[in-house]
Length: 151
Ligand code: FES
Image (cartoon, rainbow, N blue to C red; front, side, top):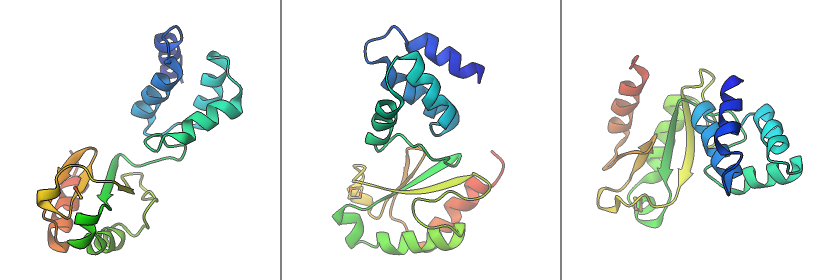
């Protein structure tokens, strides 16, 4: 993990650098591996339990392996009313995983999110931050097909 050392070097002297380093690790690996957690705790001179506490406090940091594409389903009321449950059902069926899980090929992870600010187009998902709205089961399948093709 040479990249990990580069991250340590970049953020070690920065105020609040540990959180920045966690972000950088997650950008690199899509989650925070155990080895990274240990090395960052040591480099930033915090107890491992505290580093773990920080990493698990923030919902946008993950200690579990995640997919290349993070699909977030808006669960706020307007999306809920307009059929988010149907979108969840389609995604779970198509990907053969449940919410919170990652496909065995590490391509997709399913997560819930709060309102992403595209409420005029409910129900909404984001894929790596890119919003897709006015979803139907058919549209969800089309979108997944695009992401399944080699990019
Ligand atoms: S409520 Fe779903 S995007 Fe705003």
